[in-house]
Image (tube, rainbow, N blue to C red; front, side, top):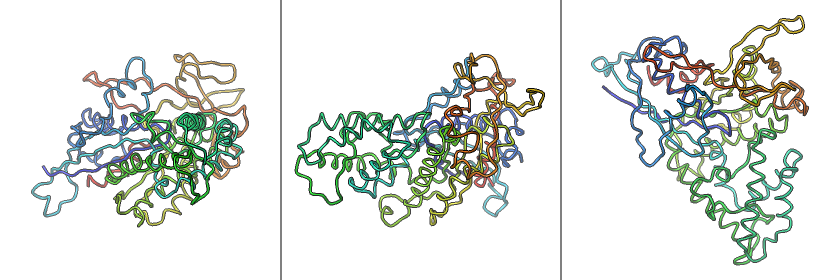
Length: 474
């Protein structure tokens, strides 16, 4: 049996659903084949054509990378107390192997047309991808841009404490570890607040500040922007000089190795986007998400530029942007959600000439937590979604208990996606309208004849599979 390998990068900004996507992808692949559930993935042609004979997990090739906790996450989704699995905050890897019969009958495979595709799934936080531009920025440049971004109306209130402490700090004063730690702590608190659902901001490098792992407390993660001029001569052992050294250490010991050792080895990439969270928080969050997506795609283009080509040479030839949680909307708005994401990525795709990759956009739900129904309300028949809201979710005065189902009228996204930047869709920007998209529990899993959970329902997961690796099974 001949074999090939494909490295698939899965990333997304906070709460975009990476863990759920990978778990659902692997479970659908392995169980759809074992249980003969071709109808579960109708757009995934190799399966519907009956050419996949087996799908199973194999040991991953990189022994120094943590394994993606697939079994644990699957139990969370399909167990008796079904709940969404915990998000991963570090890089991880998992290999799923597909055994199939090649469709094309070349001289090479006429005698040997049974083959194998090893798909190595690499899960990493999207915030790490946003760190790439730092490689081309000095400390002074990054500081200026970060301080300017924190002064805009959407960020100024949550950045007030940090900006106040920064204004009192003298970059030329003698370095003090206490001062450095205080500034780094206040800066990190600002980044953390910006990530909450209330603000849902996206462009917040350095990415490791909110997910430090074993680097927590290290000097490479104990720095903050300062008001310094480009080329300014900072005294030896001054606060500004030390902050600059730590910023450069972050690039050298955190950013550069990730791109060299992991990013540069990817063949395909999916970027998951929680566009609904930005819509909930209003136009400022939507515009910030557009900037983040531009930076994400520029990472692929930048990787091929002369400046970084000696560090890593990405070979990614397909990139899929996916708006997640499409099940939070009625199907009449699914295409509109995709249209919103196309609008958000349009500028990025236009500016990313030279990526050399095929790029597509999709709206999906890796696990569909709702179903649709027509509900009579005040004499009208309305399109609703029905699911079990997570305990504590509320609409007005109604608080859900996590057990009873609820019928929700999610509203419709605008036909013109440009309206989301103005905040006049779904009442965006109105404080009373924030957080209108409820969180639902995963659906109850059905069991197969072998008493194992069958694949959970989804929206367009099969279309994502076909784009990401369907061509490799021809």
